[in-house]
Image (cartoon, rainbow, N blue to C red):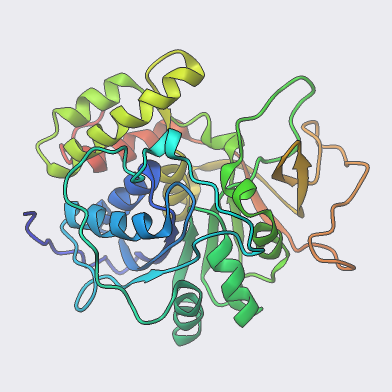
Amino acid sequence: MTTPRDHTPDNSGRSVVVDTDTGIDDALALLWLAGRRDVEIAAVTAVYGNCTVQDATRNIGAVLSVAGLTVGEGGIPVSVGAAGPIDGRPAHFATYVHGHDGLGDLGGERPDVPVEDRGAAEQLVHLANTDPGRHDLLVLGPMTNVAAALERDPDLLTKFRSTVVMGGSGPFPALGVAQIVDANIANDAAAARAVFAAPRTQLVMVGVNVGAGAIVDEAAVRRLHDSPTEVGRFSAALLESYMDFYQQVWGRRVSPAWDGLAAALLVEPRWITDFEDGPVGLVPDGERWRAHLLRTAEGGPVPFEPATRPGQPAPSTRVALAVDVDAFLDDFLTTLAGDGARP
């Protein structure tokens, strides 16, 4: 049993609402947020994606427990969200990446957790309207819960301090360059279209174009195995499972810190070293969909304009083009390891 710890943020901190499909990289993002004294996790909402929404909900409880945080009364409120895409299509689960339970099938206890009477969409609307401008929204899975919340309150994203989404592919790639799968967009393109069309305070897209370069390597995982904390050792076990999949992609035991990077750029936007503000459109990519900043890799216009909102131009999204990977990984690994050492 992990002893609950003081999680009171400092006065300069952020209050973050996390919408997550609680797979391996989501779990690491939650652990990193929990380890930052300048962050309060105000609420967590579960969605399908890496695993079923039921597993995603149980995983939230398991991960927050490792971090020494409680769920439910007196702790962090957790709400259950969508079990599949907003248009009713069957859900796709990434069991081949995250295991059948979403956390690498590592075993261990994942009991049911107390959940709020409000479902995820209702909870997002409640939090946004109860204290407008207080919370940041971090979207780590398919955007189904957010789109459902927008149906209830079309101005939802104007009531969050900012919204950061892990998804999208940046601008169109250079000729001859293939991009890694944009899973969160592909899992519910209709929901993503609604989010990118909605009015907002600020919407930041942290896509696969930058996430693929934020690589956790074997040396980092060894450091986590040697951690004096349960969080560090649990993180190492998760990453070993993640690398089982990604070694088939790159021929070596590494893995990208997808959701951890999105969480970090919400808290530390200074780590975005290059960005562009512009409209984002949903475009087909074979049987899948992608979200692209509507410009070419060289900065030119594209010869078509996908309609994110029929008859109206899409509002501007801040699209990350480059990040300070070294600064991010330094903080990410030090926070997870809990050893205070810099690599």
